[in-house]
Length: 567
Image 1 (cartoon, rainbow, N blue to C red):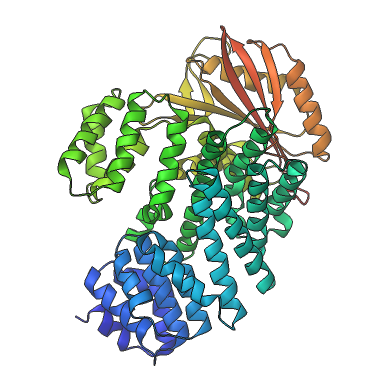
Image 2 (tube, rainbow, N blue to C red):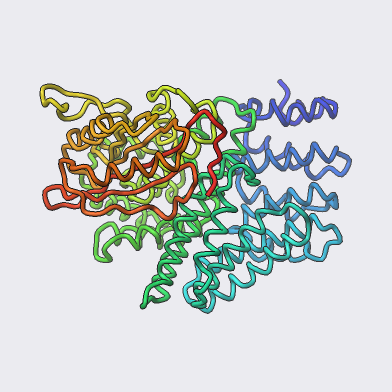
């Protein structure tokens, strides 16, 4: 039987292209790491090979890195040590690929990008400048002092500006230029135009009718924009410190990393993946960008540390985990100590649960295994849940099949599948507590749980063509009745099929605000991080037996007419 290299070399150019586009992953699943590395390095470094074939080979090389079938060092040997090509398209692909490997060879990759700036080819200099901007953006957002942060961000701003001015339609560079410019002004306490700039950035990110990023990624900017709003709010306070800004900058980089992670997943989704690769892609904790970028993982841990009491067991565990991530992975005693500490943090998790997770991630290295077990055992923050639900709603709005007189259950199924793909444990139409009559168990639309089945939140959804007051009250009361625990955050999703969405939203909000529900209204707050014309969000805080609980209302226009999710 031919190995994969001999299988490939026996084909003509058209067959090679077809193989790399459509047949590669099925063969890769049957091949060894050594065979795959030899095949791809031979194709990429062969000066007589067709350049489009070589470009596809670089893409497949990175795909295998993302899937952890090849090691980053193998890609670096090809893309740095052995690289000789002068072809524009190949070098553009090389720049994009090296960016994902930056954490492994920081100085070499930064120097390579700097060399491309001198290229006479605008496409290459623009690509290199853009990725240098990303590198300096990372440095600025993760800096430990304000001077270093501003210095790195100013470099990043200049690089994005240079990239955007070098060639047309470099919208990604223009958007990030505005984001970094806003951030620098916040850090420099230049506040007179912050809210106006924030509004303009929102329009660039979320104007779906002319969205020039991959639309599928658009909703993933929700969290990114939310953190920008938080930064602007800090600047509005009479007193603020670098530590306040630093916490939000870590959070901003975490949100950027989530976007990059999704970009990789979307790219892989378009590939002709074989069953084994497809199963890995669809697993909840497949996070290729975080796996390759330690700084991204660090930012996520730092964000969680900012949410925790400094003297908590979880905080102590995460600080030790950060130290372990930076230490020699062969230190077995350190690893064993962390495992013991992990069990103390999550006392509610049974030995069987932890053993099952250890088995699930048995193929991972010690660092990845500990991180993934921690992620599975951790309850998501309120912001994570909120962002995920909003993203799911935006993704549904981006699919016209859900417009008009579409079944509520089918819309709920879409939301459920999005939550599950984000790693949440979800029960659709779960039986909980008592019905309105108190006679027997009933159903709520979507019930979100942690790993041991404990509730995190409830989603109740309803199709509305007008403000049907009794129907609205029934659904909201249903959450109060079914929520036997008094959860801090529950959701009402309104799928509106109406002619005048703005008028409908105002009447819906005003009715909900004025109605006398089971638990008294304390306050109503409109979410200024969700300023779409076709989707609105407000939160009502209720006093439930002297505990404050939130009911989040997301109202979206799914009418049969043309629907633009614009700000």
